Image (cartoon, rainbow, N blue to C red):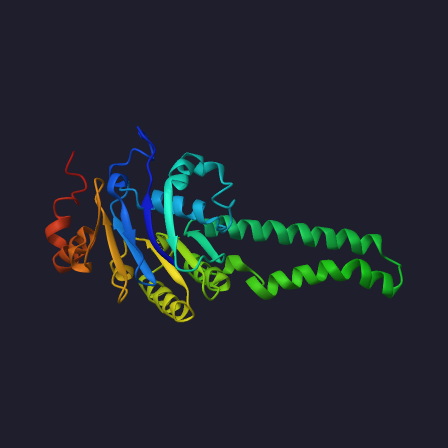
Length: 270
């Protein structure tokens, strides 16, 4: 499994992403099966996760693989600079962002509509043909539609976003794989986040490894996980109750009025 990561920056590295300050002394250890990356928006955790996905050559869900995704072209220099150390290199894995579920469901819908249109055309073309000829002509199309229904349900759109996310993720978990998740909580209610934690636990028991960028205090509390916090200038190993976002949520949940009274004043500008 993945055990450590360092960055070999080229001389004079500048700009995005090679000029990100935290890269100058980046040295991460993946000593546990779950590593969690915390930090504010724009701190670089998602950028680093994308670079790992490119370097590992993993596929994505509902979009081009990171190595081929044109939207990640600017990240490729960082991917080339990564120095990944492995106990055992795995070829099984996935890069998953919550928003990619929408693209995947749209692709499923388009694929099924295409197959059903082909089936209707074939039925017209084979009208009056022998039963044997109809089986040969229609069987593969019916089998393909049946396989989609068996794996994703009669109507994947009928599930909530969170239900779809969990279902698709579960379908792709392979023992011994490495899974890179970018803010999965964006699709999930607190109850569904607990379901995800249970799913990760089962997968870790089967030998899988996870690196997760997240803002969720619940996910950041996964027992035994390695925690890193990105603060813009550096990445430091930390504890759950020292993470800035966790402290903020503790304060808000303990006394929401203390925070919101300064922010919620509709009509005060009139």
